[in-house]
Length: 436
Image (tube, rainbow, N blue to C red; front, side):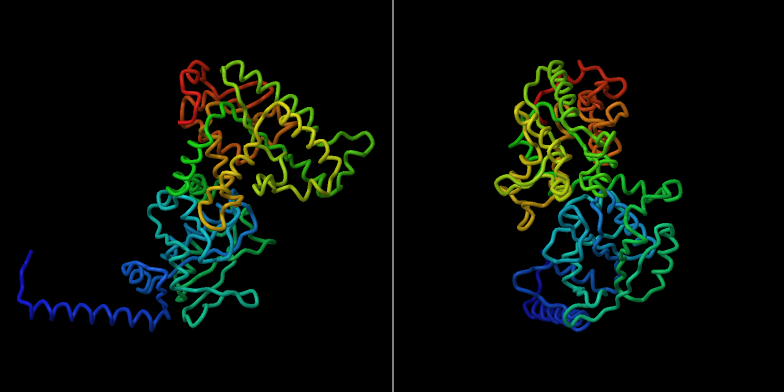
């Protein structure tokens, strides 16, 4: 340690205090920054965000994260092309919502920095402390007494990120907010042009890795709820069924000479028989089912509810769906969505997120990806009962393929009992029948 006379030490200390006070005064003057005693922010972060940086922000998107991730990928690439910092959007119920300081954001849910290590990314909470936003008459403005420039831009899905980035680089406003017009640039439109938007699609595929926070939460949950040997995943909402329910209000079942788009009870019987056959291969005993055939809430815990309103409007379809639910329940199968929803309610990851549908989806994916045995439908031979092109199902199968034991304990059709190529059951049978 270097020793110095008290006088010299006092002079240097006073100089440092003055310099720090002047810096803080300039920040308060230029950014209208308000320090709250209940929120302690690292000085280095305050200084880093006060040196003339500029930002890309996303506001509300209508679709679930499966499609919204294309908007996320597009915005990250645009932020790099425009030399701006990307602000991780606020997320609630599996959707991107308007900027909100009390909400969890994309960094809380996904490991974005590992997915895009070259991008500069900050959390929404950190951003809003310096750049508060308020919406008036349909447009975004600086909140409170803050003073900074805002430009709103409705991106064209067919416009390259580099072209948009060059345009935004020339804009002096500190904040650019990329907005959505549901008639022209919903997120699913950014999934088109896969051959030309290669970077966007590549980024979309790697941006679904859970954050450290979610990963630890999921591991704890798996430890407490593990022990279910076979998981069955049934995505029953066929496109034809959805259209019939939306357009005909259940009358399709009554139309003369027409079969309903899906016969739930018959499908349930086929799935049950296949699951029992898989159990006979494995010496496993119990079954957990994740499916959109379940509705409503039990004891305050709500599982998959995306189509609850449609079922209520279509009593004929709903009655058949109910028979399938009853068949599984009488066979002793456990409703997986309800099980995880109850866990979330009892152990909320953050205040206000104990019933978050988006988090539920992530945890279901983790649960299915790590199950000792998994039965689903991605093949055409079972497409009369299941949505074989479900991105959610494909994501689970892809994660299971990363492990040879999980891959070879994955059945891709309950009709053919087909498993991935080059798989022998003996490989998987030697593995533990519990979650890792």
